[in-house]
Length: 369
Length: 140
Image (tube, rainbow over all chains, first blue to last red):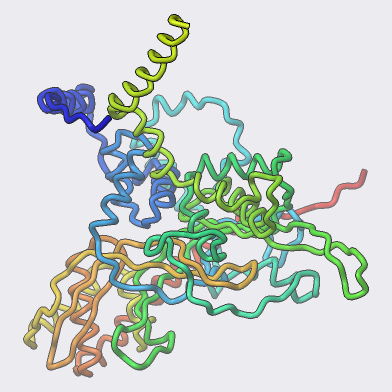
């Protein structure tokens, strides 16, 4: 059976689009982009991370246009991204130069530089705050004024402090394996289709732009027994790192000659995973490996889950789905997953008709038999 | 002052500074636009710390402009959609390349702004350090 062309939906589609517009406007309220940026940071961060485009203003606009739907907002951002030229590749960004806003370790209480809680919901009661129903700009301004006054009274250090990585401290002690700097050019999944097994760079790029819920679910599945990784979080750090670009034509490629174009906020996680290895005498001993997670914005759950999956995929095991590269990497992308599921609601008249015909034939055969 | 330090001050500092410096050039020299401010992306390359390998974390939205001043090309670029500032940065970049006399006077202005930024940052960090945990081991 060939395809059957049908028409007649144009007017209904136009009316549906007007209906969509009506639904967005009927409340007669306008949400400003600045309001989204100021009050919905986690949402903006997630949209930027899953769309793989760091652009807070555009992410807020996408959220407004999508009326709060994450999958729609990410789709809009990815579509917009495809209209923009890629002008440059940055110099290698290093998280050691992060201006840390938060940094904790679940492995050691005394880490060099100390544990910095920063802003976190970890210690809130998760009780509904009914006071927010009555908050006003004036009340908030007063609170901010008091806060600023407290800050003014503080005695700052002479220099801005950068925090050493917990893992470097352990590497110096010889407790973790040292790796030399690997300068291999990364694979770019936006330029080439992936083929399994994929290089580590493609795996990390896919994981970092994965859907938060999907990455978290698979990381959780590994912890519950559908995988073999149960780590201890060595360090979670949230902060800003500079983005630098070298001059496209000048010969001087020294860092001093680079352009600084701004900073990106990221969450980075190093998870410590105990593994059994055989030493030179073929005796089994315990060693630690590191699972790595990172994403745009502050999204600690996603970064921790990514670090679990990174470690799972470093050790392929066909008996566990979370250790199967194809299973993990092919199912965590927001646009691909929601797009494929959504396509099921598009017309499938011909394919379904064909299935119906088959069932009718079988039924007819049964009656005649 | 080297380019990285200069562009950091001009982007992190008050937007008025870049405008003021660019205006000083526009007043005395002919500025030819090579590339008008345009939006594009930069792919950010990162080093992961588990195995020290490189990967791409994603792209950032940026604005870029290119101008020519006294036969020297300058590039202005920064994150976000910032048409005016990208052109101003390009003019300043070209002025430094052409070694225009104004750039010598700018040194003090840039250093002053750098100090303001440094003061703000250390203050912010002092406030942040209030969330630093002081552990006490309990006797049980």
